[in-house]
Image (cartoon, rainbow, N blue to C red; front, side):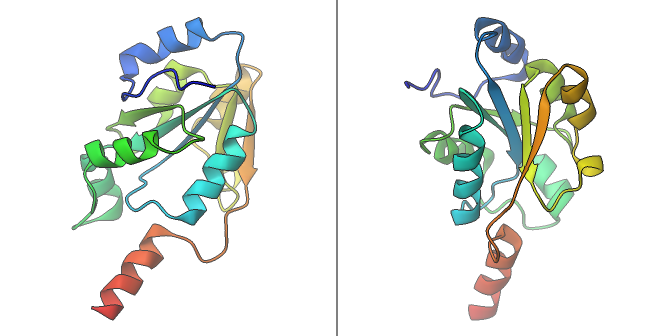
Length: 159
């Protein structure tokens, strides 16, 4: 399937995308994706299996800095988005500046909301909204030992 767009989709365009593809299953996941690693790829592959389009919400640079602290992100948003768009399972990327993707989820109205299984159902932002519309929340088990924070710590130790 051809990717619908090779650019970052702005929040204002999410509703139009949803309307244009109302007969398709839209899957949404989100994160900082500061350093892409195998764990991310497995998450994207499994998420894509759940629908027709995988939309990835990505924290902006200022959002990552607020959530992860000084020195983050290591990779600027424009570059993180470009990398994500090159990955086969990822159809669209949208960037949000808030600390959570709730507003983005409300605009997109995905059919499936995906997070890693390390999140409890109660801690998944947007879960209530998606389920209230008849959608579902899927928690996907992540690969053991893969996290951006642990990768950064390993790099620091080896310097």
